[in-house]
Image (cartoon, rainbow, N blue to C red; front, top):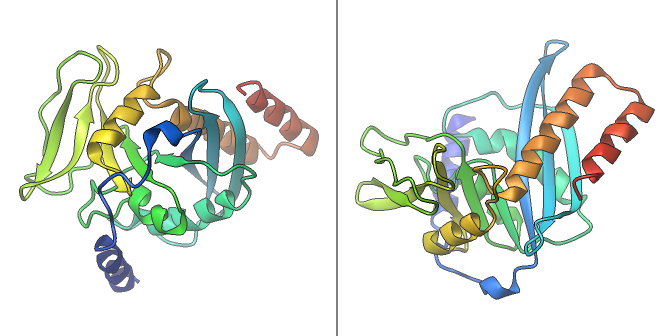
Length: 242
C-alpha cells in the first residue's frame, strides 16, 4: 500500500502549478475544508465538513458534511489518502461551486510536496491553499524562524533551497499559521488571500474556522448518537452562522 501511495505522489507532484491560474478579483466563493476523527465500536470514523463563504462578506452560504469509517491506516506522509474519500463525497454534495478551496492542512509543505491541499486539487478545477495550525517538519533542515509580531509578518520555510511554505503571523500575539501552495496559485497570492480572510475572532482564515467549528459539532452529534430531531437542531444552530 505504501509503495503504491508513493508512486501516486511522485507522479502527481510533477503536475503541480505554483503560479496564479486565476484572477483574484473574480473570487466570489471560498470553501474551507476540515476533518475530525474518533473511535467507536472498534472502528475509526471521520467526518468531513466543507463550509462555503462569500469572499466579501465572510458569511457562510452553504455547508455540507459526510461521515464514514476510515479504512486506510495512518501512515506518516500519506494522510491525504485517508481523507480524500470523505472529501470527494462531500464535494459532490455542494450546490454552489467555490472559486477557491482552503484546507486545514498542508499543500506542498510536505516531504514529497503532496499534502492534502495539493493532492485533493486533482479532483477539483480551482486553486487550492493549505493552512496548517501546527508546523509539519518535512525534514531536519526544513525549519523556520519566528515571524515578527505584526499581522502579515512571515518567514519562509525552505528545504534544499526550495521555499515550501511560510510561517505567517495572522494576528499579533498569536502563534503563526503555516501557509503553503496547494495547486494553481502562487505562494505570494496564497498568503495575501489568507490574510484577507482572517478576522478578529481567529488566527486562521474564516472558511477553515467555520469548517473546524462545524466539524467538531458534527463529530459530537455523531458520537452521541443523537436522534433525527436533535440533529436537525444542531443543523439549525450551524445555519445561524450563515
